Length: 96
Image (cartoon, rainbow, N blue to C red):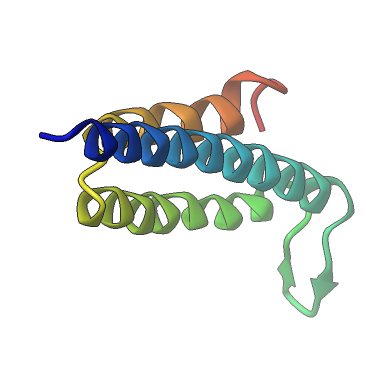
């Protein structure tokens, strides 16, 4: 393997890890805000426990990120992506 290929894979892995962390943080903020100030219409509400529905975006983003990493052969990124999404969602600012 050439050095430029290894460098590209390492850079793609870092990009995937950073994107996973930022996505996790953004989803945490949106979910916490919706939990406290969410919309209510008729019998449906996103306030309180209804905001948990937004957490279903995390597995979708994980699948998209894993596919992107696999396509670019960023194997370290595939290993780091679930961890960084988890850290952004539940660890850095606390639980949702």
